Figure 1: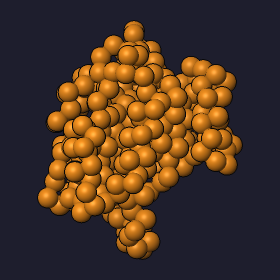
Figure 2 (figure 1 turned 120 degrees about the vertical axis):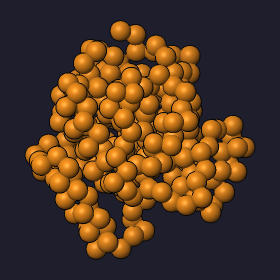
Figure 3 (figure 1 turned 180 degrees about the vertical axis):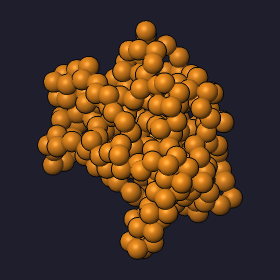
Figure 4 (figure 1 turned 180 degrees about the horizontal axis):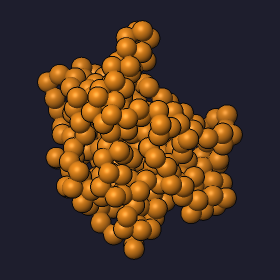
Length: 252
């Protein structure tokens, strides 16, 4: 299957994090070749007060604006409804991508028809996607990412869950299994739930060791009290268990 067949809609939810969005969009534009991998960027502004919508308009980006912060799952769902691509890529606003990232992910996704979702490796994630590719500066990061594209070429590992900081799947999967479950708002475990549903429908997941992106990590939640965040994580974990009668820790 052709890795470049069809357009990818890159959906970036954000809330009062314009500088992060600027960095994410700049990296996408710099390290994604439209002729090889056509794409559009859809920013979902969760009621920001920092001029995100105005900046997107000036940059010619599609921007879905909400009156309030509806959380990550709802924002992703609105972005997917507005998207025109054959593929959907959910991207956190604190991710910096690297050369060849989208082509590499599409290669893995289209390697077999039964692959449902793919994701990269990164410096910061829960579970197996966190790797120790060494770097100390932005230049070092891009050097490490370029080396990984060669050293780990086509190193795609089956995995039971992918973290939602950067997840790619076909529109056809979305049409089949539906949207992110908004019971997990404002965030945490909606990605576990989506991966579990994909697997229930017979699709596999792949972790791409040859695609390395930088993830700042939990940028949207760091402003919250640590205890409040812990309570949110535990609540959503309990909701996952109540929904599926299985502990998501089994998939780590």
